[in-house]
Amino acid sequence: MSSLSLSLMSLLKRLSEDLGCCISVSWFRLASLSEIFSYTACRQLSQLLLSIIFFHGSEYILAVAFHGRSNVTLKSLLISRNYLLAMFFSLVEYLLEVSLFPALKEYWWISNFGLAMIVVGEIIRKMAIITAGQAFTHLIKIYHEDHHRLITHGIYRFIRHPGYCGFFIWSVGTQIMLCNPVSTIVFAAVVWHFFVTRIPYEEFFLRQFFGQEYEEYAQTVPSGVPFVK
Image 1 (tube, rainbow, N blue to C red):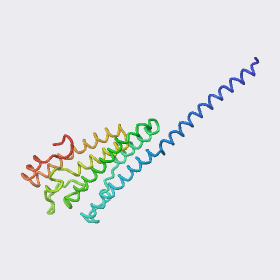
Image 2: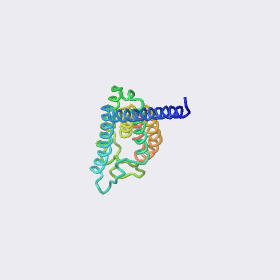
Image 3: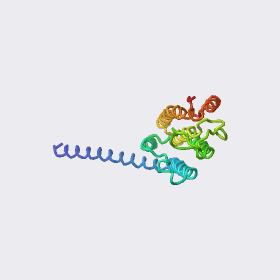
């Protein structure tokens, strides 16, 4: 066989391998897109979007209702840089997993349990805001104000910090609903760590404001956040 024929065969073989590689990559991309735009992904991502819009929108509306528009800023939407980064990380995890391991997102009993957590967390937090009224603020009060009173009725009879409890359940529920194993653990750890430092700081001032009344209340009513006394 001539050298020209050998070269031609070698070239054809290389082209076929390259073409096969391109077809495989294209097929993977098509498969990934089909998973991203599947019923499961569309449903779970739309549930997340609606949950986020309702949570932050209702926070702002209630803040305006109880404190007045002039006393409320966009900070009442509770959207921080770290929060956006966390949500972006969870979205990246979801897209990677739904592309590479689509079956992981098909555990509907887990996803629906997470959705139920979102609803329960939302209800607990909004009940806390409505019950406390003007006494509920997004910033910790370090000075006592005339309208600031200790709330021990309603949901506060059973949970000392229902606002924190509700947010903890809601935030972890968003990741369980997406069937995001990594983000579920990360969200739970980060949010818990935030509250484990915030609650003692806030209660230092509550004890200054209400003295023995708050001491007795704190001894009989749980904080609502796991492993936080």
